[in-house]
Image (cartoon, rainbow, N blue to C red; front, side, top):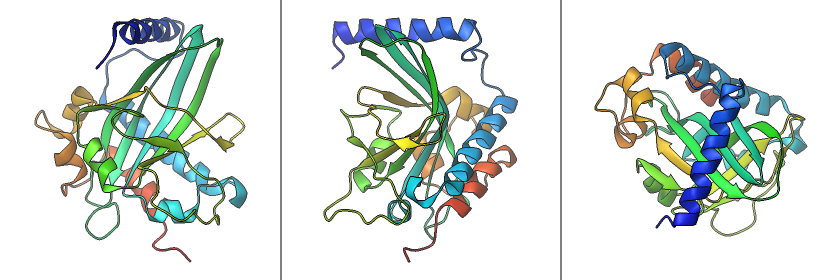
Length: 240
């Protein structure tokens, strides 16, 4: 249940981000086919950049192999002075029945959140979320959910050849890259992920919903192909 204080914080944080938008920090124009195509290209670039990093600065291969769905937010803007907020759009895809990514059209999601803290300035980074469990997939099928409350999210381990600790993986593992390109721990508790109905409707039609896109076979639209192709090369077939 959203308390009054949390509601106020979120509204103020989003107002702050809107102010940054008016200064050129974050676009406020309505979604268009052109902007969605750019989103797919940017998300693909995030995956390819991760592949190019030194092994000690990459997401573990074992984590990637066991991932059921992947979300990539190419540009998360975090802005704040005492009241902070974050905002961004990204693409999410889930594996098909064969374990690959073809015939699974990506869905567009928005991520927003607010927090109280002594922070200043504006920070822009990229975010990769790896959904590891059936529980996380079930949550992803909702039109809107809160990270940390509806589903647990933790910073993932780093190192391509790292072995995971014994036991079940966390539901969602998060990786954020700074301008220096280093993936590090990230706290996303309180952030809300929501299925972008209007943006998805422009591509797939007004009857689109998370389940019909993420878990059903669909031809991938040409403007989304760069992201799907990047996923095919990003995810190895097995752990060596």
